Image 1 (cartoon, one colour):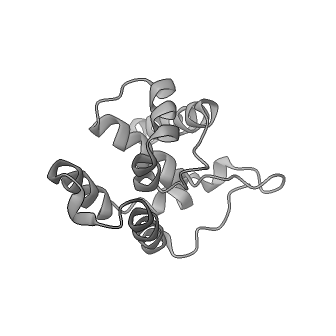
Image 2: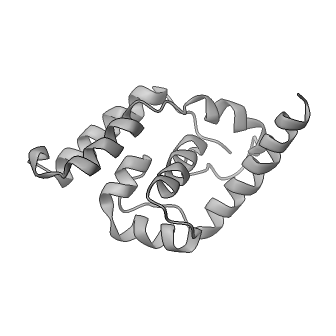
Image 3: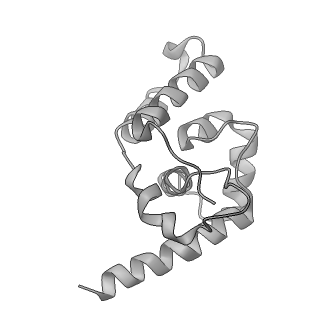
Amino acid sequence: MLPANYGGHTAYQDTFVSGFLNLFPNPFAVPKQTWDIIVKFWYLDLSKTDTIMQEFYSPAGKVATHFPSCLLRSYLLSITLKVDSITEWCRLLKITPRYAILSGFPPHDTPSIGTFYDFLTVYGSLTETTTSNR
């Protein structure tokens, strides 16, 4: 079951700011290259992803712990950072809190490898269907 994403992109931005400031009390210590990535993802509104993918989640049962928008954002971040292995990316999310926060996850609750593969399987089939209908 997909949880309701109240606040959409604004909620992501609010969560990012609080998590980031906990991690980096002095934002001026963050390298420029990291800021370039932060700015890119700050404006990347993926909140419609949650609505589009809702039909792929069961209406009953256990509530999912990660929003599709955060999984997509995290996957795009891995591509930006040139990490081409889901296994390696999941390891990096666990040991690099800024990647988790930038993805939209709490640093102590990052998705598993299986969660990413499930998401990418559904997302891939969704994009194939959309592309073939053109």
